[in-house]
Image (cartoon, rainbow, N blue to C red):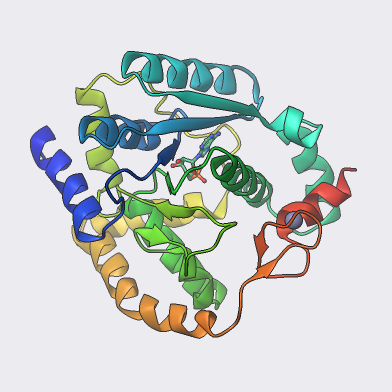
Length: 278
Ligand code: AMP
Ligand code: ZN
């Protein structure tokens, strides 16, 4: 796929799904990886004037390099950047939290990290006044998620899928948007490489052994025989998504008793984790 074709695909996703309205404040959650870096670059190029938010996970050299790359990218493209530290916000490093909480619960390490990151990103994006929060999720991520939920026997978990996440306008929940929703990971990688973005292409050093990693490998194998496989999974799932959302809409939204963030339970998962390390 040529660079221009790739850019058109992203712009089409933004326009056809009304991801950003004119003048809305949009913040990109930048990890330092190729996907969210591409999102920040393209939103700037398309004239949406994004800002960026980075969470320093303090995982040694890997985190240091990612943070430096995010800083370089934002400086080069005149994107205002806000950096937060998980250690400062939680009082402990992510590795410590994962160890303690991982041994006391049946949460997987990547799950713990993901819950805390999403919680912090939503809280900070809201305090910065964002109307939309853009992430780097791509077609591969979405196909993996759809299958993993199906394998778990809980397709309802997929209500957070789709190019725009946020069931209804809620003062506490910043609507998440995914401009790369229809882009294959391979195409994102090629685009980022062709643009010489300062990014690390390795996955997080802790990801090995994660279930998602296995599903990713299986899908990549199957895709060799059916190039439209991931697109077909995501498009099929999109057809049932409105039905799933309709069911949830009937239950009113709840807020965590501890932190006030939107939650499906009395106490949100992030606070359940935070209580274990207090
Ligand atoms: P992941 O859960 O690692 O697949 O990341 C999903 C999305 O969350 C990425 O595409 C980024 O937009 C965002 N993200 C992940 N890690 C960070 C981070 N350390 N700081 C800010 N945003 C992040
Ligand atoms: Zn909470």
